[in-house]
Amino acid sequence: MLFWILVATLTAAVAAVLLLPLLRAAAGTEAPQSHDVEVYRDQLEELKRDEKSGLISGEDAGFARAEVARRLLAATDAVNAAGPARPTRRANRLAQLAIILILPAVGLCLYLRTGNPDVPDAPLAARLANPGNDMNILIARAEQQLVANPDDGAGWDVLAPIYYRSGRVEDAAAAFRNALRILGATPARLGGYAESLIALSGGLVTTEAQDALQKSLAIEPNDPRAQFYLALALKQEGKAPEALAAFQRIAKTSPAGAPWLPLVNEHIAGLKQDGAAPAGAQAGAKLGNPTGEDIAAAQDMSAGDRTAMIEGMVGSLAEKLKADPKNFEGWMRIIRSYSVLGQKGKAADALKQGLAAFPADGDEGKQLLALAGELGLKADGGVK
Image (tube, rainbow, N blue to C red; front, side, top):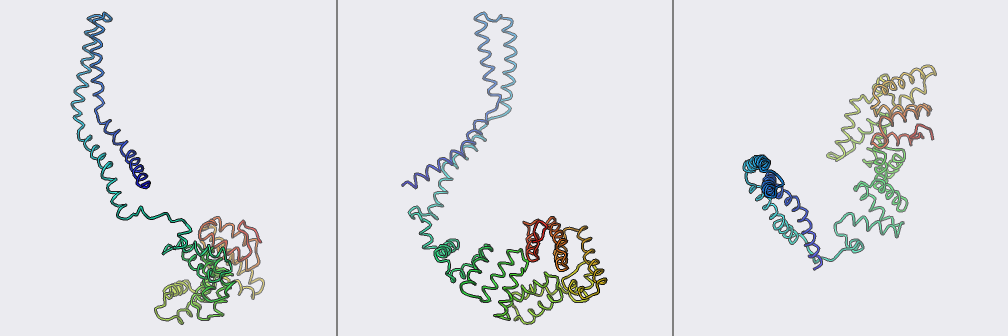
């Protein structure tokens, strides 16, 4: 009974809120000149009283009466020209009727069809005991059990991929880490842990993620997920020829119709288009796009040739970045190149400039910060 009293009270309150503007509109539909007509009529009566009482002479009363009568006629004509306000009033009455009768009736019918006032309250403890298909309740129930038993490896193993699919990537990484610690390494756990780390770094395959993927390959050499992310790491490091060969191996060993093949072939096509070959890499270096392989090869040259080559590559890229600071790949390459050369100060300065172009809260900025963590650089432009 209390439920229906509350429903009736709320319905009446909502109806009152909706009716108030309509009632005001109905009152305001009368022509404003109608008020003037009443005022002028009162003024004529007052003139008669003043004339009888001797407060005003007959001549002055006549002049005043003529002026008031003129205004009365003008106001009357304006009221007649405005016409009756019946259509507006009728529309308002229909709207009021709809609010008072139709809306509550429709709401009641919908509730009787979909609701059930006899169902008792369901506290959180009861919902956790019977979660049904509610994923949030299932997660909360699993978390409750893990708080009571943090060494339940099976619980972490089940919860980790659910966290990842729900977008709770940081929780997923922690859950995979706990599952690995308690239950040991498997390709599924190592791959899930690596994917979580990659997602946290904004798509960059970090050193820690690479270590997990290498361990996965040691257990299962044909693990396509580990092979793919390690090939992607080579590409991100600027090792285009090695990355192309790695992606081609995946495509060659994958079964026909494998779901990851379209993405692998996309990377292969992109690397071929960029000229991912030793000659292509050298050409890229001349154009100011030094790769990690270019820098390593330079170490075997004579001091003079090495200095000229490196200064040409990095200097050319630095000039391009000044002209186009929105070149994200360029910042990644120049920061890594300075670090490989041991020029940590310049690498830190490049990181600071890159973060000015790509703020740390964006996807590109997060990748720059992840690279800085790998290379021992600080986000403020310093060196760890």
